[in-house]
Image 1 (cartoon, rainbow, N blue to C red):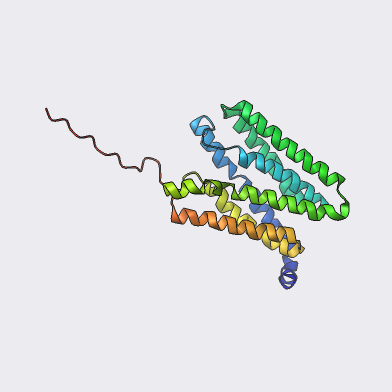
Image 2 (image 1 turned 90 degrees about the horizontal axis):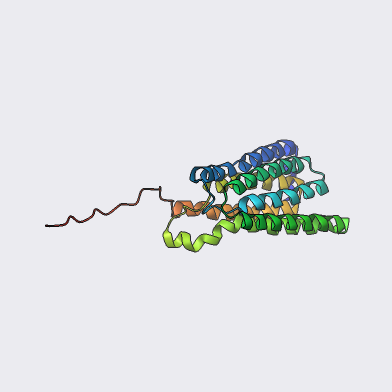
Length: 228
């Protein structure tokens, strides 16, 4: 990795800028989910996990960026935090399960507060390593969450429930952050994005194996005519 890092080092600013731009672009993929919510007038079938998870991830990555003193990570996660807050507000406006959503928001807030508190109390010599482990585990959970419905995908032979724009853009984003992690020689950024790239690739392969069926494509059997 050191050899590749040396080769990429002169392009650090360029790679960092591209990583920031594609990450901000990927964050806008949540607008597709919000558009679906708007069209159907409610949030049925659409979980709040991507938005609330995005808030928690932005907060702890923002803290991690301050620990690393990396301006790119700080700017990107400030932007992501603001955008995901907007998504949550839209979701809450349309959901019919406001009490349940409030509970999920409370849990997300408690997790964020606990992790920020931990980062403040932990030994400065250990916090970068340990917070990196926590971020890695949480990131894997969020990226792998669409695969929790794998049984239904295989059973129905359809990826209709998977958010293709988020997965595709996520693949591009993880690749760019992998390069940036190599340049920084940060093992957590490298490990995070290698595994994330694998998970995204698995999910993209499902769209090839089980393409989603367009609505209204099912054939309706004609009713048999009654013979008088």
